[in-house]
Length: 451
Image: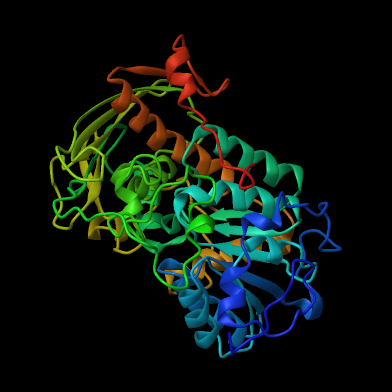
């Protein structure tokens, strides 16, 4: 790593390491991570030195590079200082260092970042199976967190994330940006104020999960990738190019398919529009068509029906479902006086014209929204910073909201796997009268990458 200085576990400079030395330091050799106590920021709810947030990035491939670009804009505006980047793939770390102008520290293991007392907040864009462990550890070290969706891959992971955020008084924002984007806001405002009357059903359409029709044999991982560290909490498996880097999404163990990926976006927007964040109990019944070959095991086609009570309404995940709109995926709010379409989830696409042009009726309910940046990715992070500055630590997609959204996704997959209807008790966070289904709410994690 020529563009920056690598640090030891203590956070003190350990000198420039060669590529061979960097790769040769095993993540597992660090052993169980000794977490710092909460409160390391000095004064909770405020930026660090010089009234700037000092941030670090954990995971800098794909969406992680978008987060880095956003932070570079904030840094240019004098609002943050980027201190470090981290990735299990040295090639991605090097690219991030270059993009950041070579003035950040580089790490392979995220635990080294968490031991730095000068860092106020971290942005996590690692694969899904890492989100919970890294978020919980970051909260326990007193750092605010922005973590990509889906927030978790099991229900029990999500519960641990909520407990860690609350117990350490930090703000955890999850990257379901529609709740701070204009498209989602226009739609939410219109639905809550009766544009189609009382909504009795919301349907989603989405293209199918892919099939692994070109299987490849296992092989050695590419140069620069710490395969053990990349897998983290997952059971060890051989490296396969049909699994890494992005195709883990199509394996139920690690990715959960479209419903856990895009469903995390769409369900978040729908719950917001329906003012249903507190409707935590429901039934779920799924059916799907399994792939017949290849490594990927997510159902190719899938339908999941959720029934809510008091108020009564139905949510349907259709894969592919009935494509009412024009784009690849979206949802429809079906009400007493017609229906309203939302293409995509309200972040990357604008609301439909009737929602944009909707006039709030006298005495209507206004829907608050952070509106600092036109770019919805920037705006979502500005909302996170606002929650930290104001000290309430409840951003627009607070971890508890995201956990409830992820629970819908995860229970849909569990119902599919078991082939039966589930009754979910949101207060107890368990499936009623079904011990087998409840065993699916958690799973073992590989030491030392554990909650």
